[in-house]
Length: 579
Picture 1 (cartoon, rainbow, N blue to C red):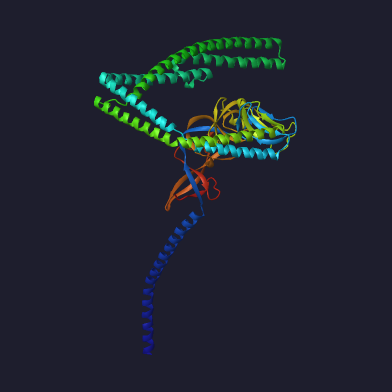
Picture 2: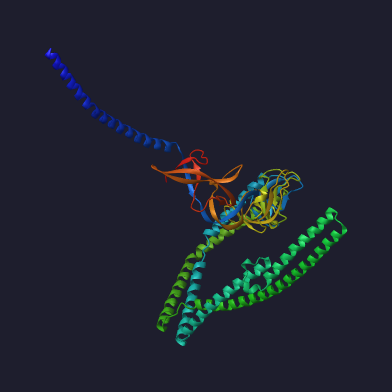
């Protein structure tokens, strides 16, 4: 009985101790679980940010800049000769020889083709034999005859050097003080020659500008009021053109007689003003050009005199600074050099005398053989009817339509020649809204003109008559090294201006709401900056080949998206490409 009671007491104590230990274990367990949970949350947060970044679109950006942008319009067209000439014959012939090729320049009366009525094997063999004889003769002329021109020139040069040395010696002996005077005069002449050359260039440039009515390269001090008179004439001509257009339109529209008369009176009045302005400009232009031509002639005359003095001084100044003893020694040395050259020439002439006589006999025999062969060829040629086809004009060969031994047909062109003096033209079709800033007279850059020897000038702008087209046709006059039928690409400048925001073309998009760019904006987060694409509406002000000048919600320094690894929309989070 006592054992049962003790046992129960022990059980009660054990139970009490167990209850006291359980809260401590629970707290430790909760703490451990909390640490594990926080660690798992931190790891998951870190990796979730990394995974999210990897899933974002990777973008490439460029910074919006400010500065100057030159607008350009690009287009291409085929080079067309303004006038061509077809080379034809009226009878059937065999093409014996072609003296031209495509792209070759020819002059009037140049032989283009040789045609004959029949072929001759005997004539061909005789001509080959003649060519062989002439080749051997020319080789003999090149190798056998002895040429003393080098020795004679050396003797002449040595004699000239000796004479100059003697003159210098005498000059130093008789007038030592004249050296300094001549040098002073030379320096003054050099300065005057520089000034006269500069005046000549300005006068020539101004005369050329007056002849072309293009005063940008003219010297203002020589043009006087010509630019003002030319401006007045241009304005009066424009006013007359506008008034005459109103008058002709009134006539075409069948307006009232009073309206037509009023328009005609206005046009006549403006024509009178234009004619008076033109007369004033032409009279002044003639007077100014005549005066400048006189000044240019006087300047060139003065320049010639001064230049001759400078040349004379420089050619005789080699002995400057030499003493009289030095000059005497120089004369003796040149006398010995001349004597040595003359002795060497006499020796060479004696040694080659016999060889020259033998060569002369051989050459004479070869000439006689050539003459006999020429007579044989001439007799054989008389048996065939050969005709030379000559060019009627100066020009450039654009096509050769036959080959040697071809048979011609009456009326079919053997070749086509572009008449060079008539020039070339290229027509480029351009969207009408891009032509608004293009002006006639502007020079265009030839993109694919690899040799750089051609120039394109805009002559006129006309409507594209193709059905349904709203484009404009730019007509360029082409000068220089071009070929008819080739295609060239032109870049036409429309003017330059400074802009606050310039971005690449690849960064500008367009939808139904207009043009926009995607600007990069950033937001801070516990894990660093996050980047987002922000849509910014813009207006395109100007463009060149690579960039747009825009205005809107962007400015210099903003980062603009130019490319992305996958499509990006406004508000999307993006990832910057590592640089």
